[in-house]
Image (tube, rainbow, N blue to C red; front, side, top):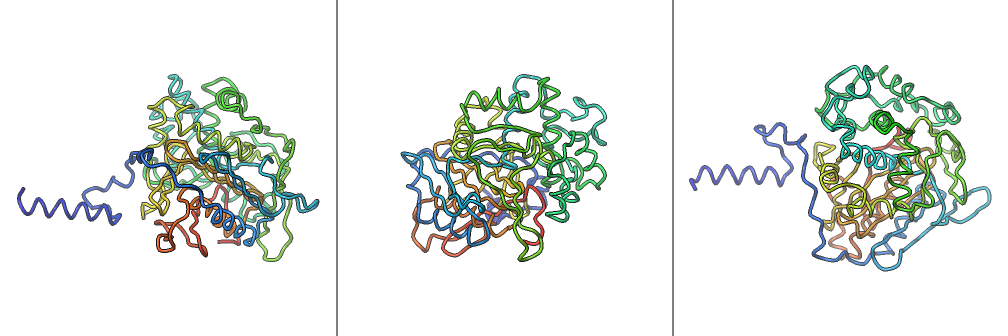
Length: 422
C-alpha cells in the first residue's frame, strides 16, 4: 500500500478514536451506529453491592427521602434500599413497592410501535402525516424521527414547567387530549430540521401514542396490556391515566421546589396526563427487571425490529451518550454497554437498564425530582451493578459521565425541565 494511503488511513483511525468527525464525513454523527456485541463470551462480574449501596446513600444525601435498587442476573435477585418511602408515616423503602416510572414509558411505547411496524401497520420511514393527516406542519417528519428524538418538535414541557411547583400544581389534576399537548408544542419554535440532530422532546412520544392508537384501533393502555404486560406477567405494571391513584403498596414521590430550603411537595397523586404515552406508566422494580431483560433478550421484538431499536446515534458532540428507537445506551467505565431508559416524573427518578444479552438487569428509583444531584447519584448504581468490584486505579469515569466520590454515575437528559438544581 502506498505511504500516502497508509497515512490517510491512520489519520482516519485516529480521528475515530479521538471522537473527531472528519470534514469528509459530515453525516457520520447522524448515521445509526450498530449495537455493541452481546458480550456473552465473558460472564458479567459479581455486582459490587457495597458500591451500589453507597450510590443509594449518596442519593439520599443529595436530597431524596429514599432510594432503592434491584439487580438480577447474578443468582437470586439482589435488593438494597435506604431511606423512607413515606415521609409522613416513616415507612422504610420497600423494593416491592410501585412507583411512577416517567420516561421509561417511552421504551414501552417504542416496543408497541415497533410491533405494529413488524405487522405492516406502520412504516418507520413514512411521514407521520400519512397516518395522522394534518397533525404536523412538516410532511418530512417521519415515524423514525419521533422515536429517535430527531423530529425538531419542541418539548411543550419547557414552558409548562418553567416554574417547577406552580407548573406542576397547574396540571396535577388536569386531563389533556393528545391534540392539546401537540398544540402546545406547535406554539413553540421548531428546534431543528427533521432528521438533522437529536433534541429530547416529550412531544415525540405523545405523537407515538397517537400513532399506536390509530394503527391498533385501541387506546395505549390496552396495547401495553396485550403486548407487554400480560405476555411478561407484569403484576405491578399499569397505565391508569387519567386516574391519580397508585394502587397497592407504593412510594410517595416528593418534588423539590425551585427555592432553596422550601418544603418538599408530595406529588404522588396526579393524572400524569401531561405525559401520557411519554411517561405515565406505573411499575415496580421487579417488573422493570423483567421488562428490560425480556426486551434485550429478544422476547418482545422480532430480530430485525430489535436491531432497528438498537441502532444508536450520538446525542451529544462528544459521542458519549447514545439513543436508538426509544432506547438509551450508556458505555460504562469497564467497557460494558447497558441499554434501557431513564425516567423523571414529578417525585420520581428511575433507571431501568440491562446488558445487551438481557442476562443482567438493574432497576433503581429515588422518590424525588427537581434535584439533579440526586438523579446523578442514583445513576452511580450502574457501575457497581454491571462492572463489579474494581481496583481503585480502574475507577475512572467513562466519557461524558460525572464523578462522585468513590464511584461513577451517569447523568441523563431530563424528561422534564429541572429548575434550581443544575
